[in-house]
Length: 405
Image 1 (cartoon, helix red, strand yellow):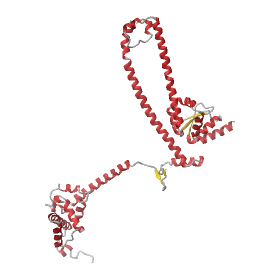
Image 2: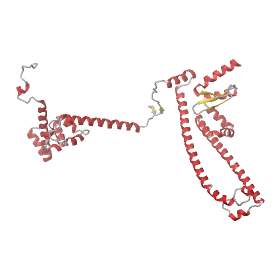
Image 3: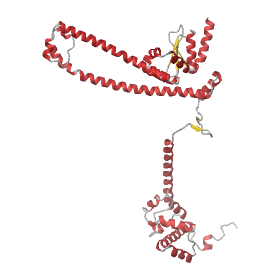
């Protein structure tokens, strides 16, 4: 039956207080009394006596209600002498504070004065704790994600390994457009496009890293050389004073360091000058000759790298590192090695070589960026053509040659 304004209120009908908050506080306080009583019985009696006591009170030992009551008593021992301070907090919230994630809040409740603790204060503390736990969990997930090594390797049911790339998303769709163009117009398959592109990018990065290392080594060598020269030229400053009394013809030749100064003054005859000049010539000849093996050694190193190369990208990387001796190294290679290396060249370079042999182009060279600089007749500057456009560009040149021819 629906209540009306003329109906007898519930509080009057049952002779109870009309404030629901007061009843919540009373029920919480009663439950706290129950919890602390059970905890006292459990810690004061042995198991058999404790069971008999519960039987006398008509309470089943081991029930879920007993476990909940003991849990509250265990974690709220700090309030055993003032359970009324926890009265404003519902039992459900007290049980939540007993969980592992929220137990730290209980230590904060002790700091509140009597009658100063409210349910809203506890709810605010729980909300702050939840925000902190959420932030810690997010941070942990980010750390775990950083530790996880991204892998593209997969295995078939038979255990064979293969690589699988995730879908490629970009707003301009450039990757898909260019790949589809290579498939439609040049007959390439996606696997070939991906393999060639990755190999080319890997060669470019490794070459840049090697260039940085070599640059750092050259800087260290340069600094070492400068330090050596500074130390080595100091004795020459002391020599200038002794050279002032030496005849003019002897000043043209360097003094031998470490020799006795009196002997140096006596060495003024023309025969000594001739010997010194001869020594200078021999030193100059040996110094000039010593630079030749260095260049030849670098060429030999490049030859060995070319012989051991099994892919075009290894060949290109080796040539970039020893570009100054490229031609000499190529001359030292046997014909069989030259033929083997030519077979490793990509299709674009084979077509360019063929075009050069047929007189369609004069020459070309490849840039690290993947572009080719191509020299053609009647053009003062080379034409820059990307690797992916070589085939179409050569077809255009053939068409132009046919028209002009």
